[in-house]
Length: 292
Picture (cartoon, rainbow, N blue to C red):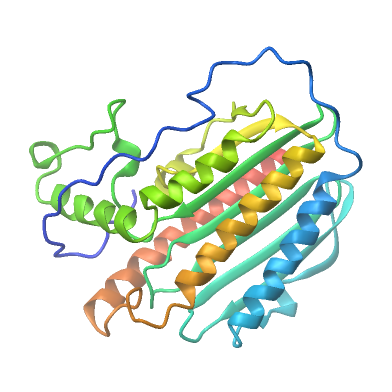
């Protein structure tokens, strides 16, 4: 069972529900099949991802490589895979940065934060299904405090105190913080505009696992689309926007995202330990099911 967020949160007005998925809201198109990508789409995405990791490292000087946790030539799915693993124990408090590339198959960037900040974790991943000429894309800013997001109903409403008791106010406060500080209407609109420009993209048929539901956000993007040059380019831009947005939050020195010493950090540490375990297990299950 997922742990709660910071205790003692004051009751907060429920935030506006996230904007409708622009792809899901569109009727199915009958356009001719898109042209196949001219080469390996993962090569483009990995090149962009490597540049993003360099940019993050330049902005966070104490982001250190972890050679004992990195790969330079492990074999996955019959291909030589690489993993660039790093962390930063300083103010940015990066508990794990993992940049994975399997040429011709997968480009994935995952960043988990430590308990000193409330900055969301980042999941950015694209799988290339060469046999079906498809790209499977997943992008999410994963909340740090539990907001009972998986309990939302079809109308966008969350359980109240009549069902959850005092916890309902705690969860409402966590949701309010997430939507007001991070997944703002403006940020959602930017990603919706980019998603609308994807060619023949549809909501992914892959159902999220229980662990994904427990650790994911209500603004997660999960799409399947033809592997075209245009789609690969747009996905690269979306991933760049997501990583740069995360970096702005992580390097914000205003103190807005830092926990004060004491109970908030201790509470966040207890929650993070469980959350990261669930998040790692969700990644393991995904990689096992898709890569064997």
